[in-house]
Image (cartoon, rainbow, N blue to C red; front, side):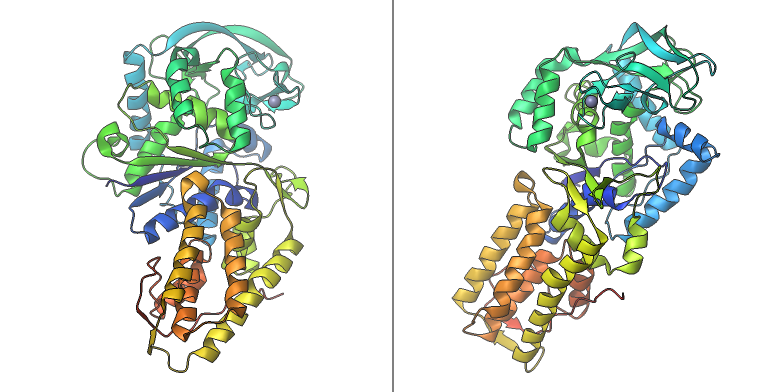
Length: 511
Ligand SMILES: [Zn+2]
């Protein structure tokens, strides 16, 4: 395959995906992948559950279960939500022996190439439990913005923190457990060793990042770059590190993301013969794109990049990271712990999926925080999408006397259809990717087509068919219905004639 590999941030299987997740990387990646497919360009859209994360331990403890059990139930739920929302990701691959071998091969090659260094570091240590704390096991004051943060990176400002960077650290598993700091030898990868390649990479892609993410990268680059842990003392969960220098330690969970993505790409491509990482090799001709949230800019935008760059010229690197901001629910943060959330599967059980996808596309947080409200979903989809769409369907019905009849299209009709495609391509191509503008484009074109005069019925139909094709990456069910009725959803607008068809109507929510 030579095409595009689209990777959505790897979900931690410590709960279901909620609407905030779906409106972030998963729907955006889906829309881009569907657009590429419709354009005849090969695409693999994949992700993989992030099973080794320390958050598995803290969430399992809270629910009185084990990380392994939590992992199994959550993975099934995540898969169900992805399918319910019509996100065209390859099935979540099993985290099995092939997965682990892919991870170990990836890190062992870096170890053999001398990329890691042994460091004596100080880490927070929970005295009663007798465990070192990192990532989801510890909370404290973020050194960059002074808000409460977990280890690893700060959800608020996005800055990294490792080892003993957090102020006033507390144990998440047992806040009463006295936390001190202790020395321990771990393997690290000093990002500073890769500053030149990093800087060259970002310079070459200036303008490719959304503004807030670009700012965070500039801020991190302006400081001494962190040393990322490659191994950490085992909390009893994760992949055992295979290195003699660090007995009893696991691989730092975040460094699994690249081999996990390589593995999930291979699974999604149908397990082709040859090495698992073949599709990610520099000579493959494949293009790589990530979709993730702002809170992952440090890991997905910098750490994971260095994990690839550290292999020399072996791997492709992402062309673009499309990053979203936070989505709020009724003006509050989505919160799994407070059960203040809406699961994707629950929502599409109540509201037709196309309407949900349209609303999430229209309101998703591209450049700043955005807000989901259930009332807004009903109101906006009714007024701006369903009513004009169904009115247009009625207009088409009135104009078409004989479905299947060949109708003439004029130059003016072809020109307008071509302009529509050009507008939508701007929304779906990565340099200018925007779900909100695509959704708004549907509304705008609907309004125009409802009232515009056309010299020939064929002109109206060509533009309606073009609107269907341009909206298809978002409105997947109505597009499938039209296709099943024989409408060819093409972005080619050069037709001399068009076969008359009827526009399928959008269903309402049964409230
Ligand atoms: Zn912070």
